[in-house]
Amino acid sequence: MADSQRIHGLDDLNRAIKELAADLRRKVVRAALRDAAKPIQRAAVANAPVLKKPHPYRLPGTLRKSIQIKSSKVFNGQNGEIGVFVSVSKRKGLGGKASARNPFDPFYWRFLEFVTQGKPRQPFMGPAFNANTGRAIEIFKARLKTRIDKANARK
Image (cartoon, rainbow, N blue to C red; front, side):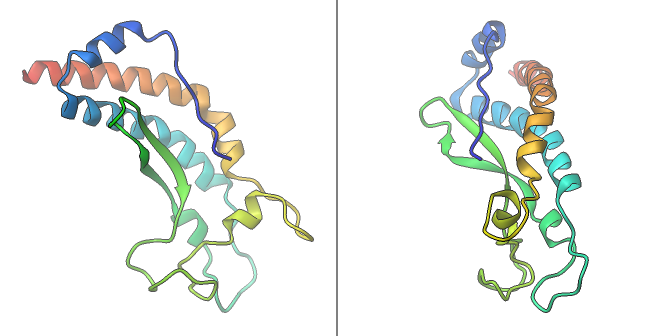
């Protein structure tokens, strides 16, 4: 599930990024990556199944509300690599610790996305990524150029 995409052929933008200060470079690239991840997030939210039958420990829409864009802790700009990812995580500040009995913890998304015994698979994250990768790359290129120009105008 940890799919990633490398973008080649951005030589002009790469030179422009290197001209920016390191802290500004991280902000510019991370913001462009977040913008590019939004179509993937929207598609994942649209594809995510919603609980149809009442359940004592689940709320309808918990999974959809928990699909977020997060900054990568591994690719945080220290080694020149910056990353974001679309992920499912427990909503902050709601319902305490992670637990199968916590209605705000969508831990069960893995059972839907990946193969489990006895349950049919209902993937929503993988198809969202596959269907929107090209669009995300185009958005990244456009937003990166805009943000670099804006950062250079402030100098």
